[in-house]
Structures are given as C-alpha cells and as structure tokens.
Amino acid sequence: MKKVVTIIILLFIVVFFVGALYYLYSKNQEDPVVYQTESPTTENIVKKTVATGSIVPKEEVLIKPNISGIIEEIYIEPGQKIKSGDLIAKIRVVPNVSSLQSAKNALESAKIALENQQKVYTRQKELFDKGVISANEFDQVDVSYQQAKQSYESAQQNYQIVKTGTAKGLASAANTNIRSTVSGMVLEVPVKTGNQVIEANNFNDGTTIATVADVGNMIFEGKVDESEVGKIKEGLPLEITVGAIENKKFNAILDYIAPKGVEENGAIQFEIKGTLNKNDTTFIRAGLSANASIILAKADSVIALKEALVQYDPKTQQPYVEIQKGDQQFERKDVVLGISDGINVEVKEGVSASDKIKVWNQIKKPEFRN
Image (cartoon, rainbow, N blue to C red):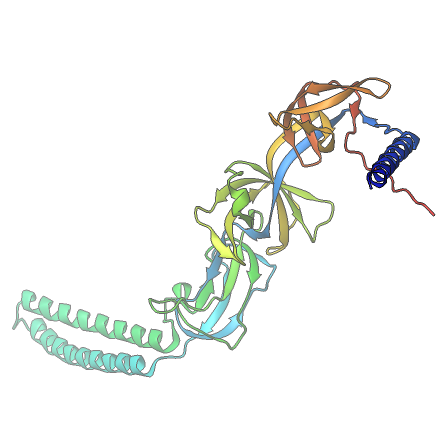
C-alpha cells in the first residue's frame, strides 16, 4: 500500500515538473514586446463645451393695433425693411352698437343745446344793439353760445370716431392706420386682409399684426446641462456654427446665464445667450438652429502629447511619461500638464520636443491561427 502511494506522489511530481518545463519553453518561444514611441507635437489646444440652440434677433417688436376692427389693407410683407412710422396696415372699424348709440344721443343733445343757445344769442344781440342790455351781459351770452358750438363740434367728432375710427382733421393721428414703432426687417405678418383684430387691453394681449426686428443685431439662444453650467461664466468667447451655413463660424460673447434651471426630459437645463459680432455682414435668418462652442480655455502653439501617452502613479496620482533612453529602454519622467481637449494635453514641464515617449498601452494585433 505504501509503495502505491509513493509511486502516485512520484508520478505527480514528474507531471508537474514536465508541465513547468513546457510552460517555460512556450514563454521563451513568444516574441518579446516591442514598444513603439511617439514624439511631442506643437498644437493649438482649445478646451470647450457645446450648447445647442438657435439664432434669434436680440429684440423682436410685436406691432399691435390700438383699436379693434377688420384688416382692410396690408402694406408690408415678410423680409421687407421698414422704418419707424411707416404705414403697415389699415383697419376698418366695426362700431360697437351701444357706444355708437350713446355717441349719437350725445350729438343730438349737443345739437339741441346749440340751437337753444343760438336763439338766446340772437335775441340778446338785438337788445345789445338797441342799448337795452350792457356789454357785460351780452359777453356772458356770447361765451355760452361759443361753448355750445364747441360741445356740438366735439360731439360730432366723437360720433365719427366711434363710427369710423377717425374724424375730420385727425387723419394723421387716426388709429385706423397702424404704423411701425421701430425700424428693422419684417419677420412675420400673421394676419391677412379681412381678418378681425383686437386691440390690446387689460384682459387681452391684442392681435399681432406684424413682427419687426433688427436683423443686424442677432444673438444665440441655447441651453447647457447642469453638469456644464459650473464651468462657464459671462464674458467667455463663443464659436457659433449654423447648420444651414456651411464652412462658416461666427464669433460671439456669452453675456447671459440663467440663474434658474428648467427641467427637460429628466435633466436640468440652463438658458444662455450670446451676442454675435456685429462686424460680420453675413445674413442669418432668424430661427436657424445652431451650436455654440463655449471656449473655456485656449493655448496656442504649445508642446502637447496625446492623452493616451500619459500614465498616473497608482499611489500619488501624479502624471508621468516614460522617455526612451536606449533600445527598448525607458526612464520615468514626471510631467506638469496644462489644458486638455480630450485628445491632446498641454505639457508645461517634463518633456521636450525631441523626446520619444513610450506608447505603454499600445494595442496588440490579433493572432490568426489555423
């Protein structure tokens, strides 16, 4: 029994020994790892974050009527440039029956009062001419007569205004003529001839007849995620790219960041605005979608490495690279890094342009075996 146990143990030792020899032999047959190297390059590194949005005018003015009625004529169309005071539409007033009747009654009362004062004036004038009454008494009658005439004329004008929206002598100030309050380009005319419009009042915003804006003063309006809003601040430069305008970038300045975020699709978004450079004369249509690259940091013509070449000490987390000193011989060198764009990183100290850096995480080519 002891012999059997001894033989089994000896056989196990022999098999283990043969297996170890085979493993060592196989390892010696493998090709040694040959590390490639890369040299630092001179790059312009830009660290940025991207916001999506659109291009809109900085100020859009909604032209609304100050009287209700029906559009009788429209004198403008979208895309037309107009000046402040230009006539854009004419309204035909549809009188309110109650107001019209009240104005008509007031006119009749003023007419009766005028006729009565005229009779009194005529009688008093005859008495004054005969010297029966004094000039002072006649003057009082004359004043009452003139006031009656003025009241009648005023009642006539009020009746015409209620009925037609204007009156004799008020054509230049007639509120049936809708004029532009600003200079700019007509972006939209949402009404047509024959549409009914409502004046702006305490209970209604009123009907918009036209939208006018200065297209030479455009801004970018967009939103950034809450994870990015802490990295940006007012005054940072923007690079705007518009999808409809190829191979063109527009410069802008970030001048507004919303103090409060809004939840959209489960994420908090913050509104931002940036004013485009006015010196660029390229015509941009309002409402075009655009992307804004917010420049967080920028370094021009600096020594840079690919991010993949940088290693980090497992204990101190300090960055370092391995510099070639001989054939497949490398030396560790600590480095001081600057800004990164996610692909390249600025190297402030530790390497020179002539150094060769070890590609420590190079991808091995797959082996194909039959």
